[in-house]
View 1 (cartoon, rainbow, N blue to C red):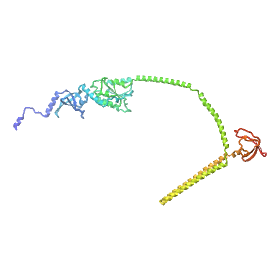
View 2: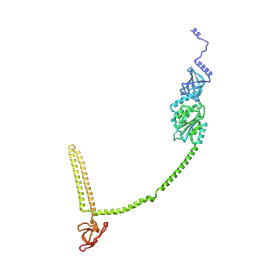
View 3: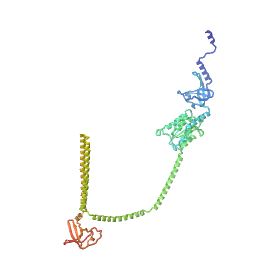
View 4: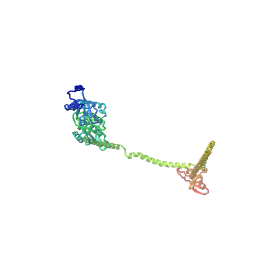
Length: 521
């Protein structure tokens, strides 16, 4: 045992694992305290929940672990992306817990413009494949916006140029959303501004813009890199408000220029595109107003001349009314004569009709016959109904109990009484109507009877044959006549005959009553 122990003893110094790890850490940090490493980012999944970022830098033959602390992450100008070639500045250190080494990055920048352009081209192809840059989805700008929203830095010269240009051309309400236009957070802030303007309600306290301008001055590719952010391009493409992109100079192109509805070469150009020139607009309106006034005046004059020409071609009111007036006068004359002729015809027709008691008696007998016939029909129908109901009662008597029979008998009795009352009422109404008609006929007979005329002092003249003498021309000298008065008749002899027109209503004949009763006229 003593021999084996003596053989294991050497002059080499013994270290613990912690001592070796600490010595390596100090050596690496002293020698590589500040290094610049070029490589491709690999395994980047975004910041950890703690805010730190862990990934690798690699080339075609080796790889190096890398870490970016939270405080450094917020200061980076570019956010790391998978596959991006970068130049990392920092210091090398070791991690004793796993016996590996890593670089703690203090600054990160793309490895030249070529890498940025390759990344930009890759984003452009991907978004273009999704249709975000299609011309068909771009909207037309409003001709005269009421409110314009500007997304830019509030302290730069860009906002002053835009406001000054808008004020010179067409003053209106301008809303400014302040953002950073350079640095790592520029893209996120501009995206939030575009989404914020779109989230404003139409009737809110802050007016919703009719047009958006995203503006920034010129710069290098690295300075404008925030406007190549994919989220910003998607926000601009999805904006419900038309967007004008005015980022950089005329030769500078970013993804937002392709996604926006209109690209302006400069921020001042964006202001010129956004609003028209008020003075030119007022001059155009004044010119159009003058042309409209002249056209209206000329049109009124043409209409006036046409009306005057038409008035000269039209006849005067007297000429227009001459023929209707003459027709009216002729119709008036014809109407008077027609009324006279019609009255004479109606008078002759009335005197020619013979209304005798026999005629009235015949009509009364006909009416009485019709009444008796209707009464007989009603009675026959009533008795037929009674017989039919009795037959139905007899058929159902065997299968009905006394109580329903009594109820039905009472119901039928009530119906019979109602029908009897209705029959009596119908017969009474029928007799009343016939009695009224008979009374009216009697009155009409009394009115139209010649006896009523005789009672007023007239006399009915008849010849020897008993025919009525209607005209004086029918009377000749020595003609025997019979005169009928209201209270009796008298015989007379005509002394002389005088012929008169037939239109005379009351012909006069000089008559002499026989027996020395005197002359009648």
